[in-house]
Image (cartoon, rainbow, N blue to C red; front, side):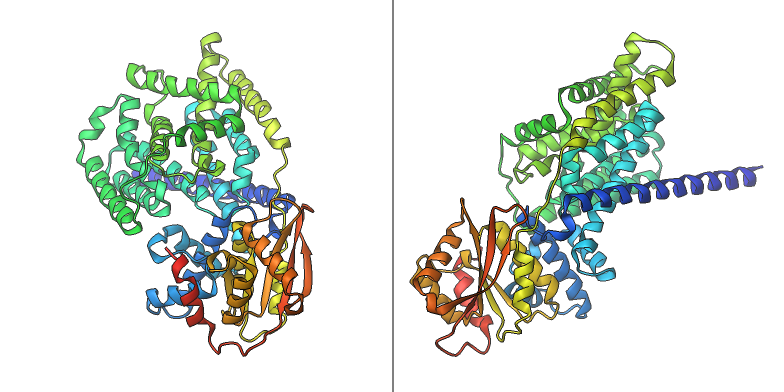
Length: 529
């Protein structure tokens, strides 16, 4: 009898796993279609966020380091940074860069391959949120939660870039679900699962240390303070605290810098994403989670089903107050799933105050309300346009310049986009990409002298009608002052029509250095931190 029960349980688990995998693949296809419609596959990595180029190039550095047979990391990273200055220092490497590097090594270092990773992460996040919501609010609201998340403009923006926001959101949610499982079971296996999920969160992104607050906050919300007296909670929590401290010390993030405006900025972002109705339902869901946790009613939902997810909200609010965010809208990505899940639960409980029974009808009403609230976001366009740097990189590398030194004059996004495009195309790392903003060249004469010292072969200038970066203005003035030294070899317009990238070939008046690396180290050393 026990053997038959065990076999039946294994079959049930396998069937659920298969269904989960199928739904994830379908959701991934939907996200890929959204990326394609937004123009992400023809835009440069870093075109909208310079951090995207840094994360991609760093992941590429990890992949190349493995392909080279794991040479000395310090020397390899220093040499790699000369060719691709977007590569992050070793102290700022995260688990995401290792995972993304393995992903690129298995596939190809192309834009479609790179963007397939956030598409998959977003799909898993959406399905996990819906799957967990079904336990607390029912199947129909759970399906609606998945649709709401997939339709949110902020989540769609997060899928268009290679960054830490989506991995952190997924790892934080999985950590909360793992702790909820441990609250229900209290076994060594569930404790190890939470410890593993928490460790991944801490290593994934700087803000991942916020998962340390999950156990005490979840226990408080669920009215289960006894959980915090168990060794199977305290021991993993202590280990996670030591790990977070070690990571923070290695990256130089201690002491934290308090940012009082961080939580308010994230709140305003969430308000613009969800709207007042859904945020009110989420607030109600938070209240009902605490209420049902403390009243211990047999008819109440198991507090462990939602309390850890609800705990993510105050945990990351404190993390943002301590300066964990970047001060951009994508910081709020980590809270999208918890807020959507709380909104579904809160709407179900509010409707339950008015109508008793009729469970399926209530689920249908809540699902329709959530879908209606998500419609404006679904109709909002999210775009990522090319800025001309990828075409400029292709044109530069086609010239077979020796030594291939290209200087880019533009804003942070333009310089990052060209660096990522060169890293993608120049797999042998023959070329050197130099950001003019890092050079001691504030005047046309100084810039020309620096270009000659480097033996630069080309200059890529980001030209705009308005709002040109200071480096672009100096470069344009240099071209105008010395027209005999520069010859335009390509003009590459932006997708939005607001400017263009002009690629100039530089006529040399003296032999170029045989190895630009020492010169580049000397010129950029004062600007390096």
